[in-house]
Image (cartoon, rainbow, N blue to C red; front, side, top):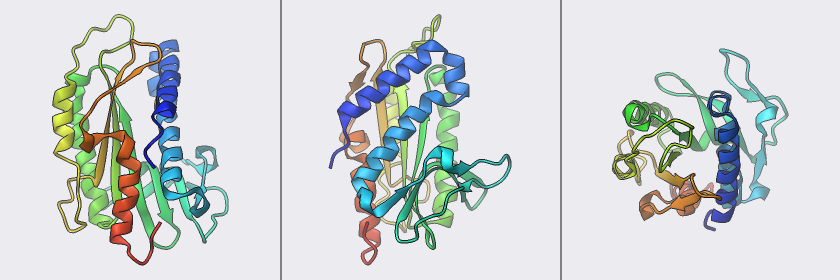
Length: 238
């Protein structure tokens, strides 16, 4: 089923409130982006089917400094584990993946990265863009059949007091379209299976979700990840 857009608008309202209260703490403490993480976990769980998965909350994950992150609770081997910030061993370096659906014996089946930029977009987006391509290559090299997704949120304008910036959402969209739609698991490793671009006008109340191209729509993003997984795993459908 399509993603719940009304629930996303509610999530964006909470994100706005968190950010406005203390922009620095919201970003550095990750409280801002964790609201979007939670939304993505819920939507992926709905797309897969909750009876098939064991949701492991972020509070149930070990996060020892410098060591792999893993569940602190027993896993249910008859289900897939849906986790946040689980450490995946990429081909070049470890990656604490924001969201991952993992089979206990066969590794990550679906993995989703999540990022937002609320200011200095023009100055930093190219570096972030290069970084997320590197993550994609590293994970695809090690897990070529996994369905990798990415969710990227940008505001129409900064809402941090004192900041004025023209954010080129059209340019960002054109960049993201170049690294999505990896249909064949033999295909290029520098493309995500599916990419979602969330454009938001945070100056309205509630925030306004702006249109993006169908290819990068959050509405179909989670269903497409599950469909791609199932196309590659004919005998192990989600």
